[in-house]
Each structure stands twice: as structure tokens, then as C-alpha cells.
Length: 547
Image 1 (cartoon, rainbow, N blue to C red):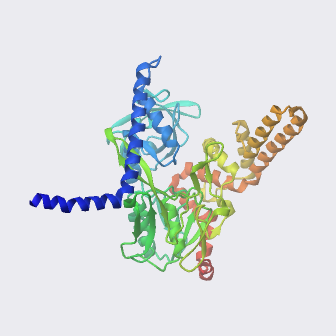
Image 2: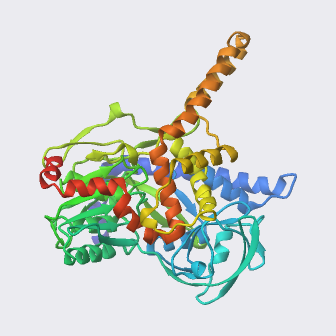
Image 3: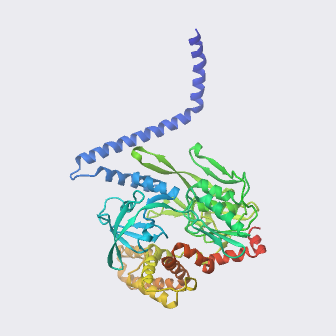
């Protein structure tokens, strides 16, 4: 009797739950069925392909290609990590690993030393930026399957034998691996008697702790104002960004909100600790490579009218990723949400769900930016990164500068310069007009070239003209336009002389005095730091930005 009574009570309740959640169940069932259907199709295709294809196949390579092409349809931050990638991500977050102590770029046939870290094994063994490692412990880099850079890692105090090429000559070196600790704050010091300077290069697990230490130390040295340098900082851990904002704003302040289609990922992040100093004037330096967590810090401090932002518009990454564990030690890093600064803006600049004819994400147009207000009512905008309060033209890389950087021409010229010049006093170092002419000759001799959007449009128009049998009439004008464009590109190098000279100087100085010496050089010569110092030395000017 009791069981019958229970059923009579339960049946209406279950019916009510089903009625209230029917649409949710329906959507879940539809999604589940579609996912299961597509997995089954892919599984059968993959099996038939590998069993029946005329030549031998490599299932792992095929699957890797399939996964990467699938994820390419989304944003570039949603990525698949194999076991080696997972370890690389761990190193990036912690800043600790065992290796030779150098920034290395993996190329098809060599490992290029980008920067040896001062005092670490590679530096002690005599390796220099520009050295090309062609063999690691008997393994040729050319033709090596996988990332040859992993060959440099190993247990502490183990020895690795490197064969490398420098300026056309081959050398061999034994390097004893050691534990490497990459600082989030590689430099802090006083610019003058009252202004402290903190360089924050990445948001790993050490970021807030090291920034706090630097801030306290500089205040003890007499700092009455702070320059926080986030230029070219690509971001990292969101929680570290919140903690760094907390150094300058009170406990309980909203820093960032994340919004997702999955409700459990909707989060609000508030400051949790007592701040170090809520009054000290702060200037934050940013540029086009300042992204993600850098934009949370700079955007939030701007929204709260707590700092003056100086430099060039930031990258514009308003997306949040989270790693998801997969089988066999692999991971999926997946974009789960967008983040919003306290004013309510999302600074995501690229629309990855709408592509142009070349398959590139479309940049949000300025006419589509929305206006938001800071705490004091200043206008700020979404959709295009963080816009500085003081925008500096020389902080923004032009199209020609970006092309020269991506072509590695500045790095290669710095290598050549280092082996042909002695510098007596680095603080007095300055490139001459003759050096710039030499750089332009280097560009020409290395066959540097880049295709502009204008050229691509012209070629496309000419192809259409040929299909319409009009090419004989316009060929002469077409060739004339191309020549004019070529002349214009050469002129663009001259038009960007000051910016290119600055980038060349930075790369050259690192060759002689490492990155540590570059920061000391910055304090005297860097234009952005000079502007920041100028603003901080004039309280009325500083406050005028925040009204």
C-alpha cells in the first residue's frame, strides 16, 4: 500500500519535472544524437581509410591533421596538446624547467638560438643569439620527427653535446643542463629619485608575487610613482592578473567578469586582499603585442581611473581558455568564455566566426565599437583592444615594420652587426644614418619582400581583366602601378626609420649586455619611458588624463 502511495506521489512530480525541463532535455538529446552520429561517421571513415588506402598510412599523423584542421575552423587559442605540448604548457605557467637556459626557435633544419639567458648553461658554454644548432647528442635536427627543441631538455646536471653553426663556421659545445627559473618580473629599478620601473613579461604563477615584491622594494627605495611595463606581454593566468590589479585597488573591487554558454563558467572575479598602495600614481605601458591578462590589468586600471595607459592599442584578446584532460596524457585547451572589464566592455578585436576571402578572422570595425564609461565617466570602447590614454605613434608597428619583424630581418642584421662592431659604452650607443643605409642594403641583399593588400587587389583585378580580354589595354598601366607600389614600399622603410632604428637598437644591445642591460638602456633612451616619466613628474598633467 505504501509503495502504491509513493508511486502516486512520485508520478505527478516526475511529470512536472519533465514538463518544466522538456525543452532542455530535448536540446540535450538533439545535441547528443548529433555528436554521437558525427563521431560514428568519422570513426568508420577513419577505419576504412587506413585499412583500404592504396599506400601505407600513418594513423597518428592523419588524426593529428584531422584534429588541427577541425580546430582551425574555430579561434587560434582552442588547441590540441599532445604529451610534449602539455609539458610545454606547464613550463609556461610555472616558469620552471630543466634545460640549457636559452630561448630557442625550432626551424625545419635547425634550432635557432634567439636569446641565451645570462648566467645559465647555454651562456656559460659560449652560445650566442644567432647560433644555429644542427645536431643534438648525435641527432640531426634536419629531418627529426617531432619538436627537436625537446632534445635540449633533460635531467639536471646531465650533459648535452651541441653542434652549431656561427657565421658559416661549425663548432661543438658540451652544455650541462640545469633547472631554469624564468622570472615573470625580469627587471625592476628606479628611473630617477622618485619613479620606480617594473617590467612584467608574463603572467605565470610567479607574476603577482614578484610584482608585489618589486613594488614594495621600490617604495622602500623612495618611489612616489610607478611605471608598469606590459609591452609585448602575451598574457597568461587570469587569477594572476586579478592579484596584480589588487596591488593598486581596494579589497572587494570587481576586476573582471567571464560569460559563457555553460553557466558554471560564468564567473566574477573580485580583489581578495588588502592592497599595497591605492594612491601611488601609475602609468601602464602597452603595445600591439600586449594581450589577454595584460589587457585585463591595463583595461581594469583604466576603467577604475587608477592608472594612465600609454603607448599603442593592445592586441585585443577578450577570450578565456581552460585545459580539458583527454586520454593518453593529452589535453584540449578550449575557449570557454569571453571576459569583460568593470565598465562592461569586451576588448576582443578579431571575429573568428566571420572570415574574409583569405580565411582570416575579420577585425571588428571602428564604427561598430560601443561606448562605455569609466568610474569617473570617461569614455572607453570595446571591440579593438585597450586604447591608451596617451597614444604614441612610434609605439605602433606599421605594415612594413611588421613584415620586417616577421621576416626576422632585424634579428639577422643584429647578428651581423654584433660580429662586426665593438661597443665601448652601451649607454652612449646610437645607430647612425650610415647604419640605417647598411640595414636597407641588407634588406635588399636578403631579398626581403612583402605583398600589400593593394598589390593583391591589383593582381585580382588584372586576372579579371584577362578573363574579359581586356588585359592588352591595361597591361601598361598595371605594370606602372606595380612599379609605383614597389617605390612606395622602399619609401615606407624610410618613413618608418625612427621605429626601425629603435627596434634594431634593442636587438643589438641585447647581444652585448643581455636583456638585463637593455632595461637599463631603456631607462635613459626609451621614448615610451620618457613620456611616462614626464606624465608622472607633473601631477596636474597626470590627473588631467583621469578626469
